[in-house]
Length: 96
Image 1 (cartoon, rainbow, N blue to C red):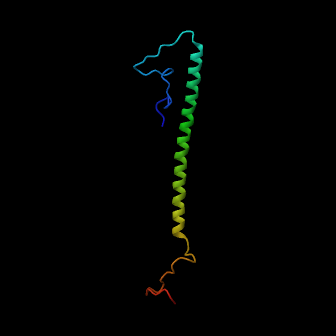
Image 2 (image 1 turned 135 degrees about the vertical axis):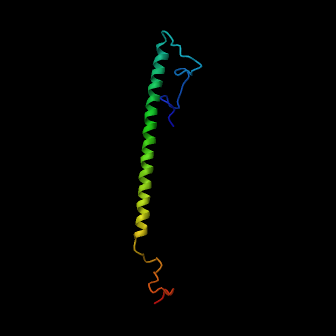
């Protein structure tokens, strides 16, 4: 599940906690570039995760609807060759 804007994938070097305030490093462009890439990748992962969750919810609703339609159709089907013969005379005897 999504956890805020940062998602579940947090690296404390790029995302310090409230107890650990962020102190930007000066002149360390390699670490800054690494953090930027990390943030971009995990931001994209969060978007993908949200899209997948919405897709799953949509598919669950579709399957539920289709199962409801199948159940309704099953109740409305005419008796098949292996269905019990209805007792039209009401005497409980299925043999004519």
